[in-house]
Every structure is written in structure tokens, then in C-alpha cells.
Length: 271
Image 1: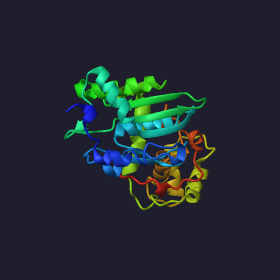
Image 2 (image 1 turned 60 degrees about the vertical axis):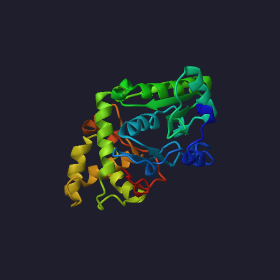
Image 3 (image 1 turned 45 degrees about the vertical axis):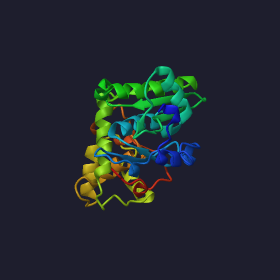
Image 4 (image 1 turned 90 degrees about the vertical axis):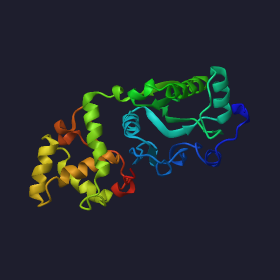
């Protein structure tokens, strides 16, 4: 049976009715973290440009998202974006490759991140670990994406872990680790309570880590409380810090408020 004659996977067909549509706060990703069966990590994180939770299906996807979400020229971010099935079928036919499918049912091809920039230009980002690029089927799927997005007039880019500088990588790992923390001491802090912690350190030019340790003693808090709140807030896009400087070299004055509407406990870890 030719690929054009095969049915679409019923789950994908159902998702196409409501997902991959809209923009900003109203966009709904084609795949959500609770729908994948994987032993890997997945994350939900509040977007600073969209004010909605983004669904990221791997650690490297989270890294790519954090980079673009913090990019000053980003206007909108859409994750797990579906490519129209008729387009991907025609592309596969022209490339002479088999369309992605399971049990003779066609699977929708998705792109990990679609970035709209200020000014109206677009990037389509495929996120893959570099060691997966030896897999022929991975390359074929990337070819489908590349052809489709270039036909739409978008720039298509491949993002691997090698795109991240050592300082940024260390910061992202520090931020990512906050998703594993469920400590009741600060996992349910409101924005107002977070503001108290932020204002204790704001404007100080001293090292952030040292200042937080001092504040733990001054306010009779458990060791690591203040830096833990700061890390969780940065991870949840409530506070911002310079990703190109290793976090343990940040000064207190490097921090800035990003999202005044967010509550830390609105963006839970679902890995």
C-alpha cells in the first residue's frame, strides 16, 4: 500500500482538530508531556513571551527553549508544531523516503520549536542530541522538516547540545535541577513572597551565593533557602540572570524581575 493510501494514526487525527493552532497564550502544542511514554525527562515551564506553560519533551529541548525564550528578539514560541500531513507526504514522495508511520498508520511530523521574531521573521528549530545524527531515519525526518519550512520561507536550524557554551550549559543544568526540587519550604511561595526574597538581594553588588548564605543566617532560614528560591524563580521565568556568566559568579545586581503575574507553584515539574 502506498503511503498516500494509508490512514492517519487515530490519536494524531484527533489532535489535529484542536492542536497546533493559534499563537501566544492560545497556542496548544501537538504533543503534551503527559502523553508520551518515555524513560527520559520532560518539563513544563512558563514562557515569558506567551504566559502559558510550554511542553518540552527532553532536557535538550528545555535547553533550546530557555535559550530562545531569553532571546530579546523573540516574539512568540510554539513547541511540538505539526506539519500538515499532505505536505509531509508530498515531501517524502519527492525525496523518495518512507513517511513516518507506526503499524501502517501515518504519524504527523512535528517540529520541536517554531520561533517568531520581532519584525515578523521566523525560525524553525529541530532539537536533537548530536549522537542521534548517525541514525538514517532521524536524518530523513530532519530532511522532511527542512524542506517544509524552507518552502514556507522560514529559516530552518538544527540545535544540538554543541550549540551551548560551557557557561550557558552549566547555568542551564543548574536551572534545570530546580525542577527536581519539591521542598515545601519554597515550592509554594507566591509571587509576593518571592518579591520579599528578591528585594533582600536586589541592588547589592556582592556575590549572589555569598549574600544568600548570609541572609539564611540573618533571617534564621535553613541553609540554602534564599539561593533555592532564586534558582526556582529563574527556572520558572519569574527572575532573570545572565546565562553567559556562570551562576556562582552572579552578583545580586545581575537579577531582574521578568514575570510579575507568575506564581512559582503554577509551573510544576512533571518529568
